[in-house]
Image (cartoon, rainbow, N blue to C red; front, side):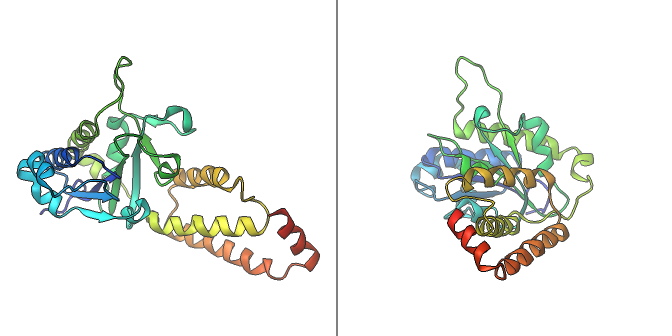
Length: 254
């Protein structure tokens, strides 16, 4: 298999429920030159008769699909991730159209991901936290809900068309920190901010959601991330040496 920016894009399906959908997705991926299918906690058997029937000559994509338990595991090693959603009112970040946003996933080296939610609910707010940009497929107001396989098909076509534009594929790349490394930073940040009393347990989730999206928009480099992690490590060390009265006040606030 030729290694290209297109073949390094992961199509990530979170908890897909229908084997027919997964099979149809494998087929349209192969039609458009995409090769990496990742299934997060699948609720069906994609290798069963239904999945293979819909995949037709793309059963090899089902056989080589990566199956993982969580979305962060699916994004291991990825530098960029876009999530698909129709939840315009739950996001402060702009929802973009596929043709505008998806070329951003085509990078000269490294891996990126396009994330799709379950058929019955789409991606939750927590799952959306792992993406840096968000795509909504425009549809008619009379019936806006798209089938999962149709959504993947539209996005796969747009990625395939964008990949033919060599100017987009060869655009300069910053040494962006992989998403799994960025996730470690978020976990460290939350733990330290809780200790110092900036975050409170009952509001930590919503506040961290805003902080995550702030950093996701900046595309932090690995060098910058190492510096930020060093700052929080030093803060955590310094918290050990606070006067007892201050430590007691922080404990009480949490």
